[in-house]
Amino acid sequence: MNRENQNVYYIDIHTHNINSDADLSVINLYPKELANVLPEKNYSIGIHPWVVNHLTNDSDTELLKNQLRKKNILAIGEIGLDKLKPEFKLQQYVFISQIKLANTTNKPIIIHCVKAFGEVSEILKNENVKNSIIFHRFSGNKTIAEQFVKKGYYLSFGHELFHTKSKVQSVFKTVPNENFFLETDDSQYSIKDIYQKASELRNCTVETISDSVRSNFNKCFRI
Image (cartoon, rainbow, N blue to C red; front, side, top):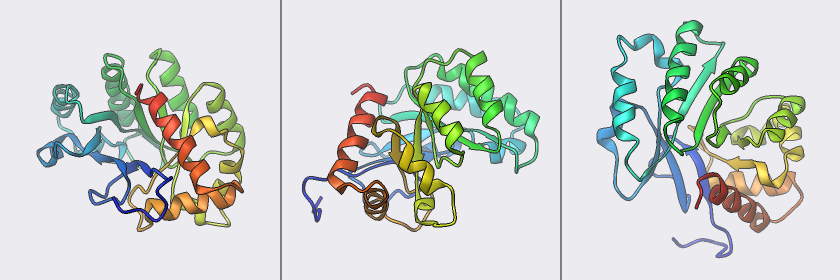
């Protein structure tokens, strides 16, 4: 890849854009989209809490189980809980089912969590999860961020870093270098834009951001 800065390696930990301009991207798919998997790409797969009310049985969970053996399925996710969406009890059931499945692998878990940090934390504790945990597009406050960092979780940040009225900017500045990722999710921002903004907020170079994210990726994914 022809990059403006050859010392920067761009990792997009969570994206829905198959044409991400990152050097390494983890593309999110639902289990029924697995026909779209390309051998040269890396993916995460999981049942999103927004779609649990469309499930009629546990077939998607079985499909997920069968596909996790593939080497380019790097993570389980995005899975989790969202209190702004219906069927919260069903969300919890599907989330726990996937956590139990995740416990049979060494693959990281990418979590979608909206206004349900307490419930997600309790489930991770009750299920004795040992996998690496990534909270994608983290939206919690500083107190929650500190609690998660103490547990060794990773917090991923995206285009909200550009929102000056959001608490995300101030939270991101306090997260240790060893505990953050960056992502594009479904935004129109490029991962290069997000790295640049991250470097401005932390008052460091893009190279420093790149080094931190790459080190965290190697540790999280046991490379």
